[in-house]
Image (cartoon, rainbow, N blue to C red; front, top):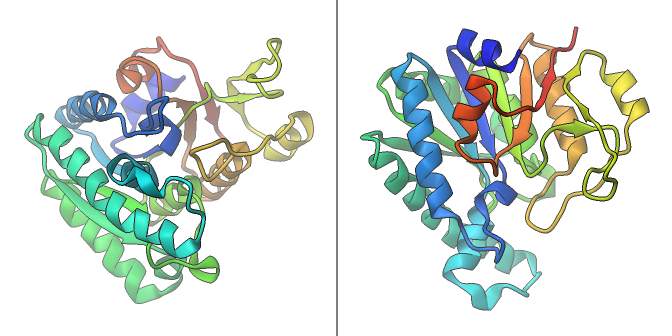
Length: 263
C-alpha cells in the first residue's frame, strides 16, 4: 500500500522531526541530511514535487552554542532558535546542493494560516518554488512565536501545509515505526497498526504517550495531523525516519509504517 501511495502521488509534503535530525548526543545529524536530500532528489527526478517541513532549529542551535543547553528561559530558547535556524538551513542547503538542488525557506506561525492574504501568498510562493525545481523548507517561526500564535508542533504545521498546497500525500518521519496499540518503547509485545481508517476507534484502542527529549509532539499530534489532512482527502504515512535510506525503503516496500486513510 505504501509504495502505491508514493508512486501515485505527485505533490508530497514530508515532515522531518527533531528526533530524526538529532544524533544521540543531541547535535544535528548532517550525514542523515545529506542522504535524505539525495533521496528527495531521486523522487524529484521521477516527477515528484517535494515540500519539506523540517524541525531542528533548537537542535542546530545547541550544536552551535552548547553553553545554553540548560537555559529554559523563553528568551534564551527563542534566541537559540534564531541561531539554530541559520545553521539548520545552511546544513540543508549544503545537503541539497550535493544533488544540484536549491532550497527556499518559509518561517510561519498560526496567524499565517488564519489570514487570507497571507495564505494566498504562502500558496503562491510554494507553487512558484516547486515549479522552478526549488525545494521549499518550512519551519515554525519559533523566534517570534508566543503561545497565542504558535502552532506548537511541526506535525500539525505539515498538515496545514499539505492542505494549503493541495498535496497528494503527507509523510511524517519520527522516531517510531508508526502507530502501535501501546508504547513500543515500554512494551515489547506492542503491535504496529499498519492502516487506520477510523480515528475514533483508534483513539479508543491505543495508549497515547508523551513527547520525548527533542521533539515537541508525541503520538497525539500525529493523530491530529492525520485528522486534519483526512478532512481534505489527503492520505498520510507515519514512519521511522532513522532507518537507512528511509524514503527509498518506503517507496520500494522494504520499510513499514502506518497509513492513515480516513473516510
